Image: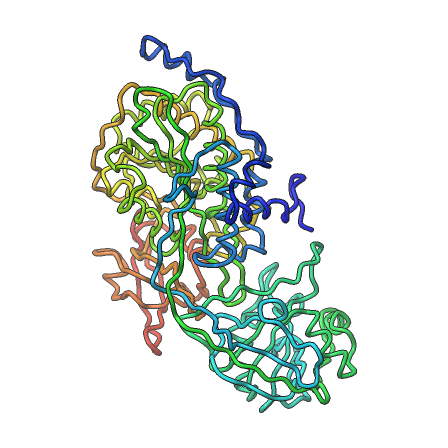
Length: 624
């Protein structure tokens, strides 16, 4: 079983799962909430008094191991990337609610729950008649246990004999062809995921390892369907099936993810070596082990439909102790991520398991404060990656009067702080939206010895923007874009737990200043967009499409900024950048590498694919 920081994954799940069902029973067995150390209020509310009873000693420092333990759970593969509407995000919601309950927070959602539910009109749902069977097998495979369709699977029936085709790769550069010597036309192809070691550069896989490439090749060979099995499990011994999630662009033939146990039974029943031995022969010797599985016939059906996604914000409340208890500070961060796309799990350890861990720990620290004048709403939002949907829903459907919300603190991607890296410094945005923000932040960052990048605007692509649009002063804590942003490689081992815990501690102390300040901050509108620092000093003037799930090569552009170099060169929304200066571009990290040493005024040669045509554009870079 997966272990982290002395906690088992299953034990952490139990906290979440019991929260989803019988929360009262769960709470009765949860750790005791920190006791308040006093409820007295100073008779005189001066700046000196505030410093005295809101000193650094009043709140405990947040422990890095506690911060990291939350991330390890939320960003584990078995949560499938916490896609909105998925089983994994439901488990994450239950976990967060369980942590809120354990810290002593009251339910802040409707009807005495920790959840504010709403629907998003999108998504795909499997039909009950989705099935897969092996002719002559006494015990047939079970949906979601032994097999599950991939989100990019075509719908419909399939039937045929089975052919094992290794990794399903044909690579002339490595003199390697899994389809050599076998005929798959009219058959079902069974293959391993990914590719043999050494085909890609460094630790990266080549294009042959992608589902898109494998599916295209299998269809060209005439296969009627594809069965994928995981490679040999790593040290944790997990053999996880990919959670189903629909794709906007399904493949031409059905595709199922089958368990290794089922795949191993199929190959050994046909007289082949065990699956682990076959993989070893492929990995170590590039041996051709492809073969038809004699007398093995499978059939199945894939059926799904579009429908509404049930989404939920998680809300807990810490009541205030003073005359301003009817006013609220919101501590928030989104807990959703991109889910599983084309078989790759986007765990989102930094984006935004780190901010979720920050919300949990900041609220746990505030629960231990000796005095809280105002009340606190602790909230994790869903649907942020789909367009700030959870925070926008709360602002339009608040659980308390929106006029009573005096300010908001948002934490999004606070787990990769590196003061020596220009791309991953701490940024604090929204400083101009609240009258008292700058003084409080200046004092607390100096006290903590933390340098930061200031930004007056709260018009960021994160949940604080929803509150800012609602006229609520909002602060934004963020440690920058990195090469793993919106990639499957955003994993727990890359988190700077000590740095994240320091940032969360800073946020908690700033929050307590706002909670106990004599006057609530006065909202000021800052029209300029926030400056999201991404490490590169030059820009083309485009907005990438972060929701692109097509699996096509290249970097799709969602919008072109007015008067920028891209617009002047003729680039349009929907174009897919495939090369810059001859270098293949698959995303932001590739772009950053190409322009790392460029300066404003330099011209780059950009090749874009528009419909089925490639166009060459010369784009002038401008200063950020």
